[in-house]
Length: 123
Image (cartoon, rainbow, N blue to C red; front, side, top):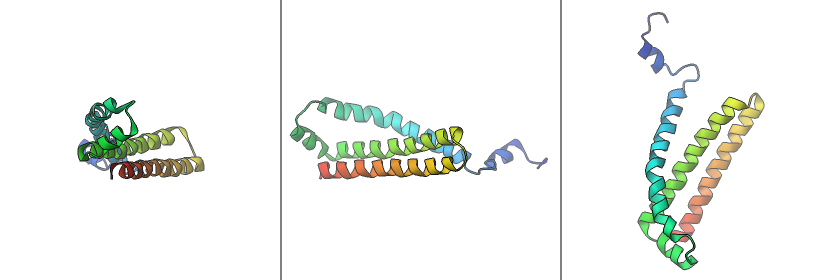
């Protein structure tokens, strides 16, 4: 190990073998949310307080439905990554594994529910 350069040690990804991937996933989802959040707010902000029929008509437009779907998927993926980090930092033992599994199930469940609701409205 003494002959490894600094770069070679970094490429080893540490003992967990996943820290770099987790960091890049958080960075990519953050950058995607920087683009998607204003698109979502400017697309759906004017619809606040509008009648149900107007909202359904707006969501029937493919671009708005795609923006909403991307926002749901990216935000819940980012949520899952962040909550996993939080649980790893502050929960120990068997409760850590249970909490991580529970939050993964919750995040994917809410993501699926949002996409199903969006599909029912948009189609």
